[in-house]
Image 1 (cartoon, one colour):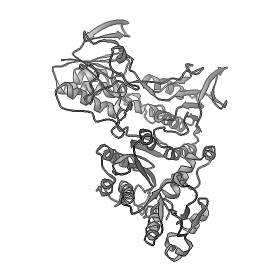
Image 2 (cartoon, helix red, strand yellow; image 1 turned 90 degrees about the vertical axis):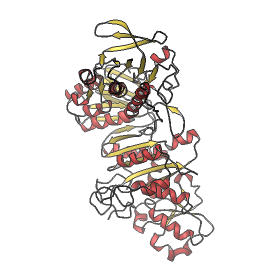
Image 3 (spheres, helix red, strand yellow; image 1 turned 30 degrees about the horizontal axis):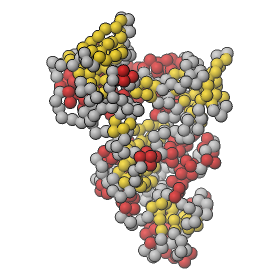
Length: 579
């Protein structure tokens, strides 16, 4: 068999190595347009920030390494520019030898990846505007940073790369402005979770410009200016465009392969509409296991797994790709944000019936030093209880919980399964009821009818709003029109509560409110617990109250989650109160 692979990095290089492990006899040729056949795209911002000190640490594999260990014919600086499917030929442009030639194939794997999206406003192509996709891209940026000529930087786009670049620039002492067309950073997240990141970015002096677009970039006397849709002008020594990527599907289209709106269409074996051609990585559309919709998810993990499926199929091993959840994680200064499965806005757009809960557990028991709080949003089927997605933000232990929840979504586990999971417990690492267990238990209480749940955005204003925190907590920070009766005084003060209104109960994060709801419901009152309590109120208010948007730029939400010093002790009941 003669196998030709177009493109390296996570998809193509993984496919080449797997093919050789399965067959010593196969002829394997890998064409890579650039100079680097396998490098760590995700590490590029950290190289710019001097966290990764040496460029060679970014190189996962070299052409020489692939040739020596796997006997693969690696041809760098060589671009496949056309495919003749009938003749099974590819035309290759060799940039070093400045010539074009043809190569035959028995099977072809397409892994050309994706290109950074470049906007077309005036000045977008000026030399001061950089993208972050390849090693040469980051080398050009780092050269300017190391020369000390960059004092002010503008990053356009607040997704993964934009946030990581903004953080690394700020850590190098550079005044950094982060511009986002949407009204939140991290567009895949739901907004009330993203506002936690807004506060963290503000605390580290990132100048955040939401609901803003760049209309043009001008230069005069070596002075670069970025003009926003608000007509605000930002001076910059460095401008980075990080608004996303677009799959390189033109080669496939020109060859007549079936493509969708956002990538090459494949079956579960990663075959394209031509049985001799497979496609993997950033260039393909994958099925979302939760919604069933097809989408493009440019992540290294899915690319490597798709490579295995394609090569296994080529060599007669039964395998299939079961879709991409989009499980991902990002560092934002002292916080970590992770997500898996569907977001609330995705479920709503897809017409999927769902429910949600917010919890704010500690990463480990409160009596062990250094416990910090996380925010966890769990989405599940309204009737089935099947876990549909989750988002988590916090300082410690985020990746572990996100990984568990990713497995739960993949395996269609229910919230009862989450509640029953037996997870590691020791005081430095977790609690006897882990954060994942607590989220499942909270959802399960709702499904079983033990506690009714309600969310801040669902309130009409006619309900009786009961704050069961302490009098001190209520005095310091409260919700307008709420009445305070601490949970420990509920039984003695029942006459103060109306019997003809639904009583909506909240505390700091929901635990004391759950207790209050159980007391009241057993005495004939109609009650509901506001999921996430006062902390979810702060996040919802900052996310959806337009009057709060400007305030986010200059202050931290009063007493809000993740604004205090790292490692503040949390009490054992997980309610977010300090000892």
